[in-house]
Amino acid sequence: MAEPEFYARVSARAGVPVETARALTEATLRTLAERISGGEADDLSAHVAHELRPLLARARVEDPEVFGYDEFLRRVAERSGASPSDAERGARAVLQALHRVVGPAQFNRALSQLPREIAELAQPTPRPA
Image 1 (cartoon, rainbow, N blue to C red):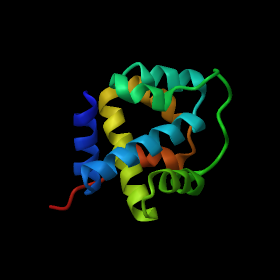
Image 2: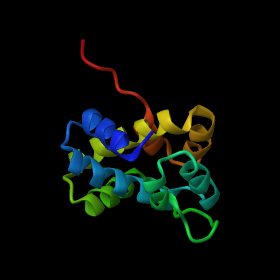
Image 3: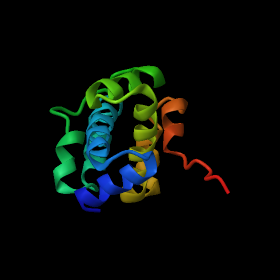
Image 4: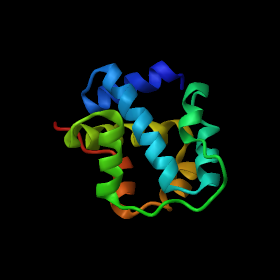
């Protein structure tokens, strides 16, 4: 999926303008790369648009930082300049879009390194009827 299409998908899912979706995407991917192993981050980066790859890149294959849901969202909000609620909706939208791009097997390997609350952001939310 091309970078503009990825941002458009995040924008639609999160209900935010495309520029906000861009900031949320960058913040979420950087934060995700900190929370999973360098090897998993590299594996994910191989599946995203060329322009998004540096956001998942790590200098060394190393152990991930250990932090939970609240810190994950705090970092996304701080990096993107978004409100906490936009950061949560945005992170959810980015992870769901990433899941579609990467595919279930690879994505689930990366999610297995996350606390349950963060991994649940990637689960589709039921849409109102």
